Length: 571
Image (cartoon, rainbow, N blue to C red; front, top):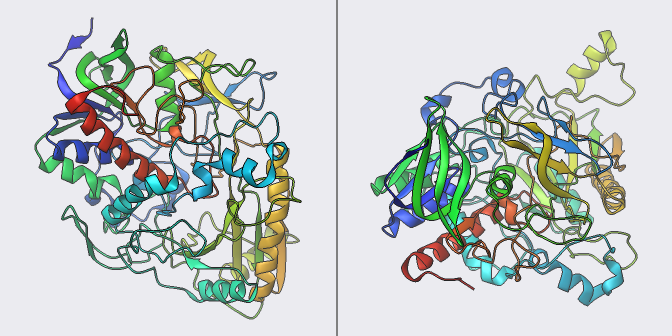
């Protein structure tokens, strides 16, 4: 029998970006919160002088143990799903701060088009532009409504950047100046200006200068060491929950973090959540934590899995289209790219930062005419110099032998002579892309694993062909001597890394018939349950998701404080 603890105001499941923001805002408002994190504790000192590419980037030190819990995958319902036994397509974070510790720091705002995608697409092109099996929908909120929360997230994290000329309106500039521009970045800027594009320095959570945020948190500027993605930052220059929001929550004295605490169920009676049941991984003991408000802030898969295993909401049925829990799983389309090789120019590509780069949005969202194109939305096209670490970076021309002296010579020659321009493509939701519980495979506690049913569609193939050619044109304008264009999208492949940008499954919307949560991420079926994170995205945009996750978390926090005082539905 589970050990029952005294009730608290709020229990938060997962202490990453969403959980950290919620904890900071709620404790500042006077609520007593418990944060349950199934991984270990983390602090900046853990990464002092630990630029170990083998340990972190290749042996996955910071990620979930797949032998204890993983996901299963199948491209369609006719094929049996199998477990992901080793890391490939995406990386599941583990530990305090979650994926917010090992991210690159690219912090975009989704476009106004994203939040009203169905309405805006029909308004401009008519209903026939949207395929019958594409289940995109408006999010139940507009960009203008969410803009103040984008601004709050950017000021808390100290985002370094410059205004996107094709983005939504801003209430203020970025709090810190843009990152330094390397020679290749300057080439990209000039080439795109000649092509009549609108380039801008990428918004970065790697600080360009020392910064003190509105909560009084002081952080040092980036050192451009090139160890961001898959690594913790030893300087605290890369914004992560451990060096920003978590200290704010802890300082109030109203936030208790329990690490090694794996939540297995949301407990509920009738239409109210009563708390959670978790396992203390250090002792194996089952513990019940009662709470007035329950907030799920773990990664996409675990948010959806907890809803399903706890029998909350109606599971999505792809045959009928009924139900919403598990609906609209989406990913990212990243096959479009170009690589340019330079014979007479050499660059310092080892130096860099996770979000040191330049971007154009001319082919993102609905910033260009799709009338004669067989896809909607698009991608940001970027050059980013994140640091060419020696093990994982070995780009050579395609006609190079795969081994031997010729391979070694080309590797040495082109290590600092290759430039990749890539498109981070949007991913639309489809009726047959969804998340559910696997009927066969279970985790180490005997709970069903999360099952993904997903594949790339004709929409994605058309998008990649169009954008791959655009990447190639930019590289030619940059003066590359040889340009290799990647403009073909094959079937989804789970064994090769693409991005940790999984979205959907507990989507937001204006109606309980088509969504799990409202615009405050409050569950339609249980008013004291909130589900916060990229699980709320009704599709995925042509950007990294973190900026939008942060904005939605701040809005949710505002709603939760209001709910704690008066109860009821927030919309």
